[in-house]
Image (cartoon, rainbow, N blue to C red; front, side, top):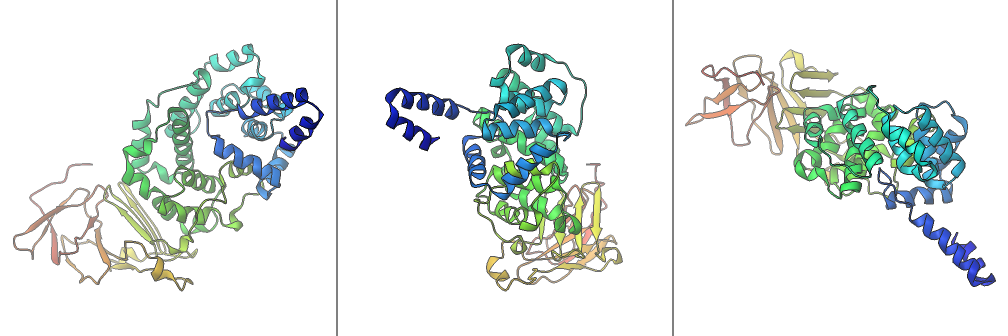
Length: 419
């Protein structure tokens, strides 16, 4: 466009003025959902450079007319290229699928200028009782619909969404992805970052999500896991744990080349963001809310543990035998592992199969967690003078303070209340 305008300027002032008008119209294009100006410029650069992700996406648009994500794909193509033919196809798709609220909202936002007022009214006034997906997806869809219909909307169900995430729904890739779209849209429309209301949770979320993946999923994720990771990274590219997640999500072997994930990867995958090899991150994370994710290695046959309130899952771990399980600082094939270590060190898990257990002697930079306790059970450390009282978390775990040694027993004077 710039080269064309320069050539037109040599012909005459009128032609140059017309070019300026076209450029201004292009620059005035300002979607309110997902496509902030920086992201839109990056996508347009990808098209100019004919990157692999752009070529994969373009092939998808040209060859997958029956895609269940057809409306989203056509609208995204129009947003990047301003190809009115594709934009009208997106509008027609929306009119034929009025109750696909998310895709219709994106089409209204990205292609709305191509629609007649009557078409817009048909889409914004259609009453749909059809609900698909989980509760977080519904919250996202409601917000998208209000933004595309009125131009603005308050995030009035944010507390519900946050509670669902904190209760463990972030481990479901579709729920996490929907939450990322919601947070991105709120930030773009309301100019507020809702993550600031729960900074500790969101700072550890990239690490918890990555470690929550079962070994086979970490090695071969489905496309939604991959996309959820990319969208989560985009919320705060400078977050240290997010850079590990970026390193995992941007591995070349994970690039999506076919299927509905192609358009999403084109939208979210940003190779310019900082990344750190995920093999260097801590192999376990404990959240006092009652969540533990741990793995011995990044191999497909690794010992992997997931404990949360009302939930226990593991792969290849000898935890049922009652013997302590140790998660060491995983070195793998990285000679510089110790240089990149973060804060957690080694983990020893002790199964509290009896009312009292002895706390193993701790080494430097080692954490001990008792598990298999009744949720919220009161505990006493009998060797301490005076006795130290403690309480298990909502999942039945207790992180042993570094200065505590001796025997830990259930306090039978206190009956735990149901969490």
